[in-house]
Image (cartoon, rainbow, N blue to C red):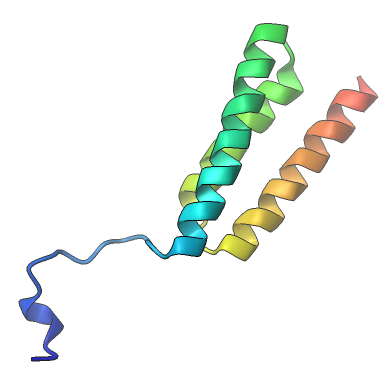
Amino acid sequence: MDDSSNSPLPSLPFSLDSGTLLASLIWGAIGAGFLIYGRRQRSGPAFAGGVALIVVSYFISSPLWMSAASVGIIAGVYLWSRRG
C-alpha cells in the first residue's frame, strides 16, 4: 500500500509545506505593498522591488532562501532610493 504511483493526486512541481506557504504569503504581501506604493508615488525603485519580491515568492521554494533574497531585495530598494 506504499506504492505512490497509485495516488489519486498528481505530483506537484512545487512545495506545499507550511513554512514555504507562510514565507510566500508574507513576502508576496510586502511585495504587493511595494508595488502599489511604487505605482502611486511614481517611484521606480519601490515598483521594481515589489515586482522582484512577488517573483521571488513564486520561484524560490525554500523559506530560508526566500527570506534571504527578500531581505536583500528590500535592502537594495532602500539603497537605490537613498542614492537618487
